[in-house]
Length: 465
Image (cartoon, rainbow, N blue to C red; front, side, top):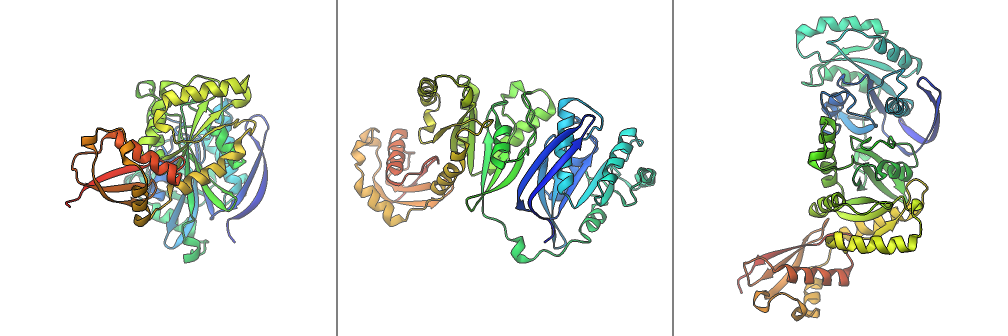
């Protein structure tokens, strides 16, 4: 089957000094097409255009993308995986450019085809020539996309790029879509038509890894996926795009998304940083479960509470992970202190499980997937109306702390949706439920049915007796 990979082992020598990298992947993927090129030539714009989603960050600053970003494309009944990579600066020995090349070469090694993107409005550079030479040496089928050919008058200069030695050349405009049909026809020419069975969407639990910068989100993604999937550096803010990976564990598929560190608005200056925060919030809204990382070597900051509040407000199930626990001395005392501090600053997350881990050493990481599965099951739990009404008759509503005159008479209760669990009370009052009565009801639901790690929403409807 095209694109089927079972534990491939790749040893890569990259960059000005010999960097050996081990990549281990255990999953079946579609035919893979990787997009490569120098910084700021339009790779992410092309990726977003052909996937039909704003998945990668786009801006005028070079080096916006650093990690590998994955998407899936269907073109005329044929499907393939497309991979966006960071801008490759061959010969640059700085830490981030070298790691970008490592990440890109992992994608190239897996790919069935490579699309090199160049800026058609610029002259051919030595960097273009060196990158084209390296890509030809891989032996992978290579296509050259001459980008920024926005109008027909730009097309003649595109022919100059045949000098790079890539005969399959396509003038395109990723911005307005011109020429993309020819490029996609060429990419999919040898691919089989996707069967309806293969096209069925896999049942996945979407998990976002969130937290402030430099708490170990990328290290955790790499540990959970058992690969160097995301660039890890001591420099805060290394991750900009949301990096996702599909992991199979115990018969369950987990879509893990490593988001950029969320900062306060006033602390973000570069366009890439501002956009990365926006995209992190967007991917948080798309997930089912949020793994919220805290730095176990630091006190809980106001920013931590803000980030946790985002997840809570978006109705996401949450697991708090206290990371870097291997660096903590006198863990018993530290754990008691941190739990007390978390209880004060995260009062709205009393229902959330907490795990103490080290993403770097693997301490406690084995508990994460089972906990995610339990939390996701609680998130999808549905209770029948008959059972809920038996529940209402059983609990003592007089124990609710709200003023008696504000307590509604409840005629019946039903669950309207799951993920998150949402309940509707039909009462004799039009005004909103008193917060203490709502909290009492939610606590009783948790006591009776669990709902571990997931928020519960209560809505009220006026019912005429």
